[in-house]
Amino acid sequence: MTLDTIPLFPLSHGVFPDGMLQLQIFEVRYLDLIKRCHRDHTPFGVAWIKTGREVQVPGEKPQMYPHGCLAHIREFEQIQPALLRIVCQGGLRFEMHDVTAGPYGVWQGHVTYLPQDPASPLLPEWQPHADRLGQWIAHAQGQGLENKLPLFAPYQLDDSGWLSNRLAEVLPMDPAHKQLLLAQPDPQQRMADVVDFLTQG
Image 1 (tube, rainbow, N blue to C red):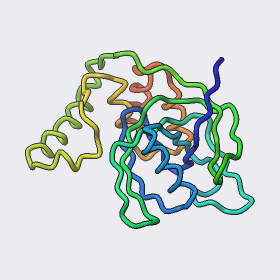
Image 2 (cartoon, rainbow, N blue to C red):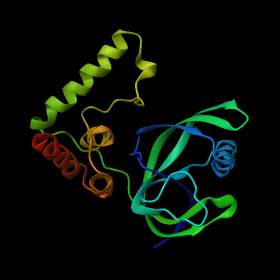
Image 3 (cartoon, helix red, strand yellow):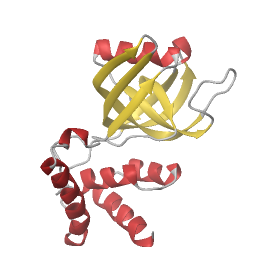
Image 4 (tube, one colour):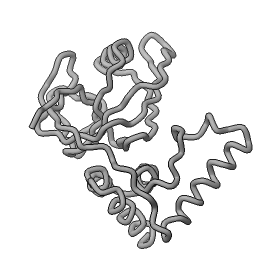
């Protein structure tokens, strides 16, 4: 097992592979981190907070769920000297084995990476969920608003991994449930779990 060490950005909400994450950065420790990641074209790790707060509190270490996702910066804007706006795309999933304090107050995750989802077709009974998302995308395109969509193209509406990730990001699940989905190695099982949640809801 090969461990990698990555800087962590603990959040109350996370991101899934190929998902869009929009952030405004104002804490000094994260301003430095994001500037370095943007300059060096390197990702950072987004970890879901289990207990604790996003904003640093002296002497407090947030507890994080074990699974997270890399975030690659796709848009970077310096709004003010101490305020950045970034848009990130989710990359590889990871499992954290340890968290340690790093330089500048940024937590460091010692992680292993989960494999990318294999291509996985939708089952016929899942097609209505893809159709609804596709109609929403088509409506935005028809209105000239595609660049406002919180989605990155290509829109893989025929793939159970991509579709389950997009639905899991927006559904009102508790973080522990989303963790199970993020960690699920089988994209069709993940999609089945998402559909179960929709049906029960």
